[in-house]
Image 1: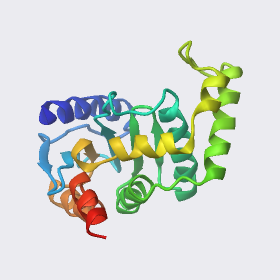
Image 2: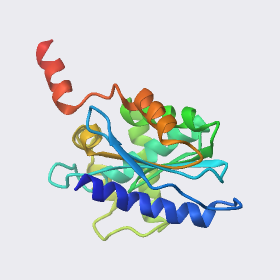
Image 3: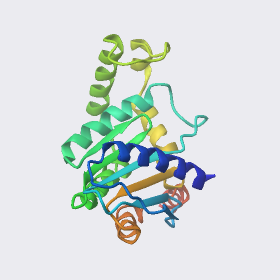
Image 4: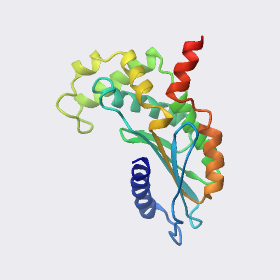
Length: 212
């Protein structure tokens, strides 16, 4: 199931790259897939004829465990705030995170992605700012929102709701990382292991808390 999921994500990125890349040729090798020991799934498709590397990271969000409606949108605002500071070609939306960078900048971008996602700690001020920004976007009709997205609903969300969402969904066993561009599978695997290899699973986190 995970292999089908990650190949589906990879196919979307391949189409996007083919449309965006201004290279002389768009020749991709067959995707190579592997898993880290913590369960994170990775797929790599090499294209030696582009100067870019593109990545997408998604999570199998468990709707039954997810927090209140609006939590995802608030987290995206906070993640993008951190992404801008890195200047690493990172961006986030409701579907996940994206990297668009040079070959030379990919290692830094991948580690920046790891630092933002895995080490995500939301301060009360960040939470309040995100709430204000989302309410302004809803009231100003800056984009489409479902009917249930109202100022009252967003103001009812607590910081603890976001923390529960992150705890339930931002875990390696639900993670799919795709890499497309001028990078070999061997080099990509080395970078991914460096950035995400020590990412603890839910079981390890629970065990560590219990042993304290």
